[in-house]
Length: 556
Image (tube, rainbow, N blue to C red; front, side, top):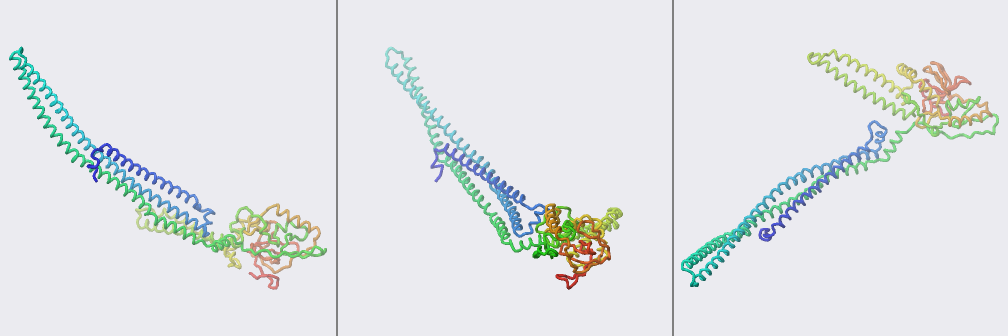
């Protein structure tokens, strides 16, 4: 099958068909280009989506990603970022391996097509010129033959006429002969041109056109093959990223399988555990006895004596009502004493770790400056070693400050963990510094005695008023409530100024009675005499509990 033999007379249709083939190729290029734009847009949107849901640095949201479920979500975001990268790879490869190659090929194809059809038109013009020459010689031969016939007829007429002179007859004869000679010459010329035309026509239809059309056919077939290869490449480029995309999806599945609900539950415990014990049962208070009543350790309105309901609530109620008290939104003390023991321990440990990192950073800087100073001493032309002395001094001072700060927080941490039964002189000095700097915070903690599960305190008037009413109603009727029994004694290690309601002032070395031990909130209830009792920080006293007292635990 050859276009040169089968389509020898379809020059114009072949010209249209080959142009259509180029149009199809350009349409395919446009399709791939739009596909790459979609891939890039999709990748960009995926990256933006992943970035949008990434946890913010140094925020509470970042802390939430300790949970395995959140870690799985974070892994999904990271994998989606890599997933987006594979779509960018698809777009990049399609641009370089399909679009760029086809654009260059189309330009070459257009030039080749133009050359082939130029040769075809040139051959057409040549055969048309030969045809015109043939037609011209043919018409001339026909004209000369007619002229020769008319000249012959005129001669014969003159020769038959007796009235015509002999000279006129001779002249007519010569004219006829001349016309016949011209006709013969035209015949010879026509015959020669006809032979030449037939030869050119044979070459045109059996050699030139078949060759040109064959080249056009080969060109068109190469175009078809090239487009087929591009379509195959289109699929292969997609297929190449499937393994990597599969790994991204496998990563998401692995992250999902790593979710551990038990671990997350334990993290919730670690995050919110207060360290307090739940409140005990509320004892029955028999108000049918007019003279005496036993006050429950867990009474909602544990107010006794002389109508001091406000003092008792402002101080410390035996009944722990933490689940029902709102959180105080005031300033956080430096030693995190507003937090429950467990949360306070975590915060202090975190602070110690941060300070140790800062110390290590400063020490690294000091070592670097020291090395640089040594270099300057050995090579004075590189710099002045004296200029580094001031900087080295500043770094050393920073290290000393950070170490003192670390020791202070380590002392508080040791107290929380129960590793310091009695304070050292250094801890005492640090505690004194802390008391001087944070007296308002300590007093506020003492004043707002009732604490919530997270150890924060409240000054909510609605809660206070409610308990005041309960306390006042019963204090009007019962003024002779028996005082709480002493469960041990304590010795004041430091002077404490109890300036807030519910607290009591003590002097270093003073011995007092313990009527309520520390419940885990950092405060101990003591009594000096029948009229003076209140709360002091547990760390300010050394407690000696009576082993025979009910529920007493000895810690010194």
